[in-house]
Image (cartoon, rainbow, N blue to C red; front, top):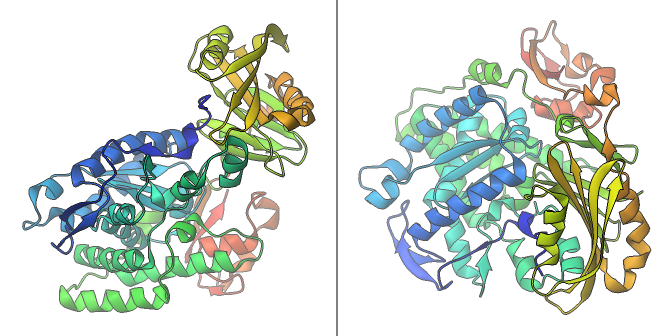
Length: 496
């Protein structure tokens, strides 16, 4: 069953046979086993890049994007991917660097030269040297072909998760996908593929080497990893995505400092470049935390200021908002609603596209109006891969030039228990008219020098903190302790 619900799972089908192949490692020069050839890695990276952009969205700041791209290309130029003795097929591979519009703390790479950093990660970096180490780390994953190495160890008959570093980002959550869509063990493995600790050690070494060769003080990178450890230790905080998909090889903070000093001697580096001022200049005004302009939930209602609509959320259900869709997940993950914009230009065409798929039975269909807007209501039934019958309630609503589509899914034998929740959400879709919500703006970072020598906590204005940011989290963003004394004149990252 497809129903075009499975798009966000970030699973790509491998065109090749899935057999292990041998190839050269650009870092070591040795020949070893890989899950796919370099040409396949490049192709898969291109395909996955389109999905990544759709899934997360790129941050709308050309100046910041160009800045990150410039730093990245400096680091790339000294990497194994650009050395004279590196085979041409590696040396001539184009690299793409993107800043993603996500508050999640993450950086990751796809095979074939695609590297991503989130604005959430950039907010937690304190200078250009730290950025260079992170970018070098991700370039190292590509150069050492770590994803392909992992693929050689985990072969599947139909597909491979290419973006192993973004595992766990599926819009519906692994358990919901398994329980409701009937995804088997293969899908579970696809969504959990990540780098090994040996991969991480090698990328740490490469990231430090590359940053040092450019002239940065790569030891600065240890402070960022210390920040990740502090976030993890907070009892009510989830592990940053970086740590869940980039396993900590142990003693990372100390090891990075030692590696940096060793490489400074090896390359006779006299740089020690940090470039905090330049980094902060580009950070000024960056969105901090979630951007409400992209949609948000408050008091049981989902609002989208830019598209000017609203709809109710069932009580206790989890909301996962992404650029391409919104997913509402029932607490026990036994039902969910996916909301997106249909490709079709009319509600009639949108439901026809779903109802006309092979293996899908149309139980009922009728026209209606939802708060004055033309709409179609469709009830489908289909079998999952595990021969479990599910029902899908679809509402397609024409509004302001788009066709908005709800798809509510539950097992057929429990569908009636969730039908009222589905209908309340779908029939509650309406125009957003509240001026306070329509005009809402995101919190942003501003850089201000400390006006005095004092503990960091004295610079935190509790009444001005964003709802999803605590004083301790702000201290972590600044790579200080809450009670640590900061010197007068030190630049601080604060919300505005």
